[in-house]
Image (cartoon, rainbow, N blue to C red; front, side, top):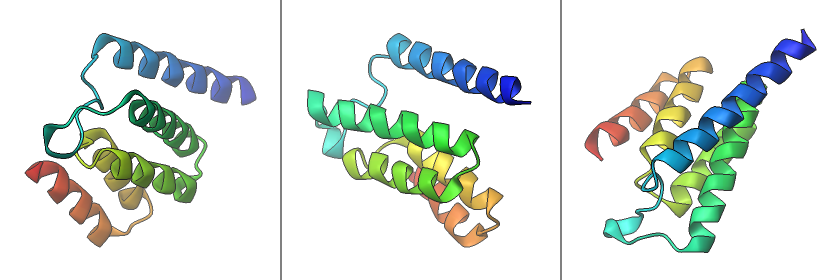
Length: 107
């Protein structure tokens, strides 16, 4: 069973790395169209990767904190809002999930 978890984790990391490298603009535009600095982009990518890892391992509260960090760095992060909404759906907090998905729809 541990091998399956390890395999899924590695597959997710490879997918994220491929997606980030194939779409250079993902997560690089922040508040009011301002391009994120190298440090902000690094913080965003680290928080996004760690949040996804925590979500995969079932640590939903920690994942939510990290997705909020992504939103703090880049309030226009559709990925962070979507993932945060999905965590709230898993936790059955439908009001917070709805807010995340409405924010996503309006961005």
